[in-house]
Length: 407
Length: 174
Image (cartoon, rainbow over all chains, first blue to last red; front, side, top):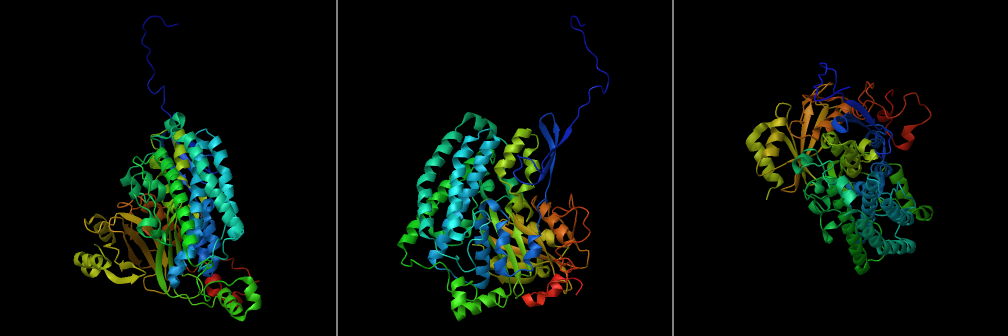
């Protein structure tokens, strides 16, 4: 028994300072995808970390070298599968640029509607899952039904939901039908209310703020050096958006704001994504108005029969369509030689396609610039010195999608 | 206003004949340089007050088995300030090509160089952690090189010629 102020002398080296290595992933609910984070922790603080990726690598770049251009679209679906239509459109826009195809305004506006719906669907998942990771399930339950509604709209437009394969080179495969317009109308009426409610639940919520403010911050310089793009770069304070800097698909006709953050932490990323959803809603509203004002009420593809796959009923009843169908499918079309880098603003950042065509039916080389792959390498630096729980919300707010990470 | 012409003339002014093959396709200027000068060129482009190519958009490899320089490393740079893109190419000799690393200039080059190494076997000198990233560590080949087939060599049930595909590109045994 110790009495008084006795000084306890510990043996030299008797208390070792130990760090523990912890694996988060490859299959862990917190990673939202298959990739592994190895962190070295001292108590609850992260000392260092490393990431292992490649668990769902599918060699898309190799496969693409053996496929005709129009069959590469389904590969792009599987990059960022939370917003597949943006990838599809990005690929179509790239090939159209390579071929020199110009689209009617109506098609470009229809594409803008689809892409902005995709952006909303992607941000909605990211932000509501961030809520789940901080312990608030209700936001997710409120918003998830609206992603379902977005998927139903896509289903009316292209027939599928997750891996959409929307559109063709040269336009869309069919026009929006009445059900699609009705569902879009419903979405535009109901979603703002739900989003407002969602923001009320989170934005000034004390617990959510305490969990996210200051978690996983990155400065603008580091973010630029790490190749950040999209909402994550904007949260760090750089107002770079491909839609504005190098507009495609008539984005220059729209009036919208690029939200930026200041600290680049989890809370900023959350706010930027929320505001982008409002901006996307505004863009969709403008697009619907513009389409109504256009004299052109019917076109849904450019008049380029040599590149655009004809509708099947025409293939069976019309000789020209049959010839073009045959030529396109058998790879007889001439794709000019050229080298092209084209980028679109994906939900996670700049999604680039670097195509080298040597003529022939397939690209000589196709490289996908996947935003996730490039910015995910900053993760160990961002969480260093923080708590494990901060690392989880940082990962969640970076919105790393395994499909885009691995390609 | 920085245009492709001013970029090219500035590069020529500073590096002279080391800047080769200027090419303009779809609005993006492309230039080549050599192993010795690539990092200097990239650093010049990054730090120049007028050009300000502060952002490395993309880095990837290319394989041309029939050329003298079989491999190329392609850097896509972007100047946010001038809203202009630039492509810099580094042609490389040999079957085990070496290139200097750009990780000293941009942190993002780290994984992109690992990816390029993983698929093309281009060795980046001075890279802090050059190992495979997407493929398994045990792999012995570099799969995006043109000589590696897409499909299993033993497969005989498909006649690729009938489908307009070049069998040489698909099956290595032909």
